[in-house]
Image 1 (cartoon, rainbow, N blue to C red):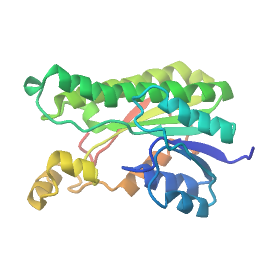
Image 2 (image 1 turned 90 degrees about the vertical axis):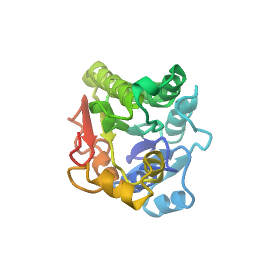
Image 3 (image 1 turned 30 degrees about the horizontal axis):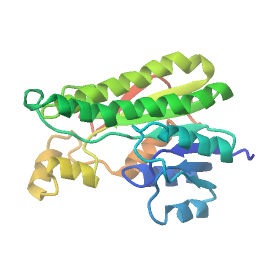
Image 4 (image 1 turned 90 degrees about the horizontal axis):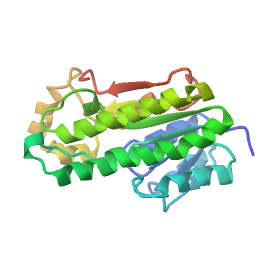
Amino acid sequence: MGDRRVALVADARSYVGPPLARALAQRGHDLVVGPVADGLVEELQSLGASVVVVDDARELQKEGVADRLVAGAMGEFGRLDAAVAFPGQIVIGKLLDSKIEDLHRVVLTCLEAPYRFLTAVAPPMVAAGSGQILLCTSAAGSRPTRGAAIYSSVRAGANMMALNLADEIASKGVSVNAVGTNFMDFPEFHAANGTNDPQKRAALEARVPLRRMGTLEEFASFACVFLDGTAAFQTGQSIAFAGGWA
């Protein structure tokens, strides 16, 4: 087994997964990834990373999926130094317009999936006496969010789950943090908010203190601070990455 750090990126196919995997490879990490974008494995290898793909590790809310990712890391590298996941489906709507089925749907991807991820990646790090875990959620979980009431509430629960885990295992040398985003420039956000329409996008950007949307490359760079071993003294924090909105 080598001395390179090993990072687990639960989904390297979408959202911040590809740029985050690239950033970690550039910072000297070998990688374990779930579903992966076309051509990304070869790109990561060209950056010097050994890459293990656990292609059947989809939908973290399902039993055993997170465990298969961890098994991929331990089986190939014998270690797990960092792990990041960003499960959850954007759901909009007012609380009084919702149905209990809406709550169940949001809990599945925004709370059960984080639970399965956190409880799978923490034990090998605790056993090793070191590690970094990052749960990517939503800045909606840090404040009341008009038009996304259930989503905001459940995301807040996921943030608190990460903070509770951080408190439980800090003495074991493992850090856990949550980062919540909003106003990120990616297809699912535009689909949920109708901002493929230029006028709607302009109206939305006017709500952001920085008056623009964030890029996934910016978010990847920010997230690396919580994963790459350079600032492992930071733990137990839920931080917004939302252009000043939260």
